[in-house]
Image 1: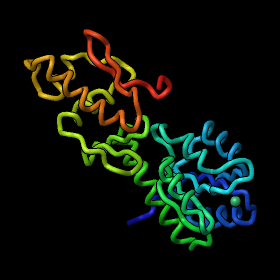
Image 2 (image 1 turned 30 degrees about the vertical axis):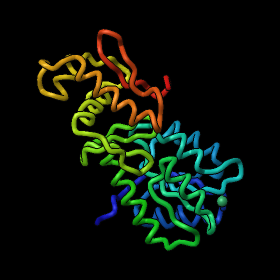
Image 3 (image 1 turned 90 degrees about the horizontal axis):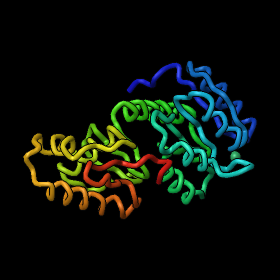
Length: 230
Ligand code: CA
């Protein structure tokens, strides 16, 4: 598949020779780069500027590069993240992927492979941004119609999926019982108990990974709480 052109890429790498190599190689392939040499600097840049992708070294002088992935995880439209790790850092790879990184390469790596990985991660991130809802450790994949937590699918029924979509679409706002019933069953002639039972079974499934995501607005409806309120 074709690699997207003209990506704006943040390179977070404290090894200056490596950073220069990455800058030059990506520039030659039509991408523009900004370099940060510490996690702090990288985090400031992702907070103030927009990037399509991040090439993220894990071993940084101030703290692990994984903290940047964690920082960005819940953000909508976040850049794609490809981690660079040294050999024998399998634990870091698992932590990084759990923290929301999209892919990783072990140093030393082949440059064409890095470019290809960045391209496909950026393409996936764009598609995900257009289609998916993220909350807590979960991602609701509206293309595959499934719920994913830390790269593993969480089994939910069709009704639970529709309920979650309706809540996620208006995240942070109360969605009325009527609206939810229409979204799930295409009718409001459903017993109130059926909706409550459905909410409870979904809550139990989410609760195992992240408590408190769905809250009740008594007598009105339910809401999916904002990240800041968790
Ligand atoms: Ca390093």
